[in-house]
Amino acid sequence: MKARKIMLVLALVAVMLVTAACSGDSNSSGDGKGGDTFKVGFAIKTQDSPYFASLVEAVKDYAGKEGWKVTVLDANGNTTKEAENMETFIAQGMDLIFLDAIEPDSIVPSINKAAEAGIPVINLDSGVAEEANDVTTVYSDNKQNGRLVGLAYAKKMGDEEIISIVLSGAKGNVAGTERRTGLFAGILEGKLGVSEDEAWDLANDLDKQLASTGKASNADAKFSVVGQGWGAWTREEGLNAAEDLITANPNLTTVLGENDQMLFGAMTALENANLSNIDIVAAADGAIEAYDLIKEGKYFATGENSPFKVAKLGVEIAKEILVDGKDPESYEEITMTQPAAVTQDNVDEYYDFGF
Image (cartoon, rainbow, N blue to C red):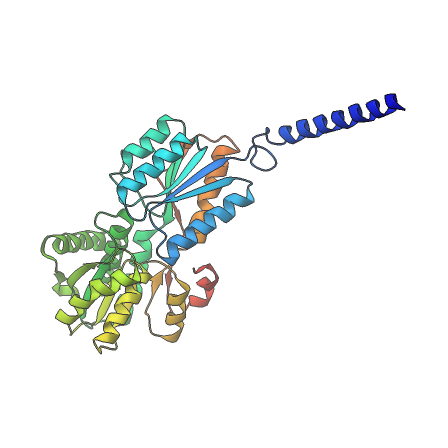
């Protein structure tokens, strides 16, 4: 009897050991699904607007479906904190890092340090300086989104004069600059009837005027930008940036912006100033709130910048590297989603990809 009990105990121990061994083996294949649980970091610049919050959730969702463990660190708009977050990911030995950088230059040393540690860095949403040893930057086609919106707005305005202010996100931000100049290019191309290449040259000249004097104009196109405000991509700061500009320029026809949230703030500023019939024109974003306003005819257009499409494409590239073994250095510097100007004519087509 005693011998039988000993044999049962030994059998149970053997089963436990086999089970533990099998459990350990299930994490050794390295395929991200039932294999190694890849550790992925996401260094996000901020989560204080729906776009960035949606981008984070989308990355977590798509990467989670691959069986990866995602850690998110938020810099809250602080470049020092952003560098610390990157340092943390490097120290933790992440398999890959997603990054949405605050500005293009200061983050370069952190990206290069990650690369030296053998950790690929994929930029999402915002580009970085050429010196960065990153994999690629995944974002919507900011220049063409802006241009397509500008073309649509030029068609709407025809020969009428455009007197505008522009709300920008952050000085030096690559995506913001591309969106802004894209709007300028589309408006100039449409109003002047010039080629796209000529329009880009004129748009860059206009942006240089704006940077040096705070104002810019093209008399032939009957298009002027009478002021630029910096709204940090948010509704609250967009409101603050717009207030003084609107007060100083009550004859506005148009508020241009680099994203929807800042323009929502500008709409409040216009309402507070008892100004109506001002066109609201966003180079890019695609917030559901903007789409609803477009349907109502209260918001002219926005360029599609879906965080879901950006996240999905970013995770697909990460999977090619981590699972399929593709060379991180084999990618183009920029990987873009398809551009589109979302207007009242086509908003239903894009609505489900809004955020």
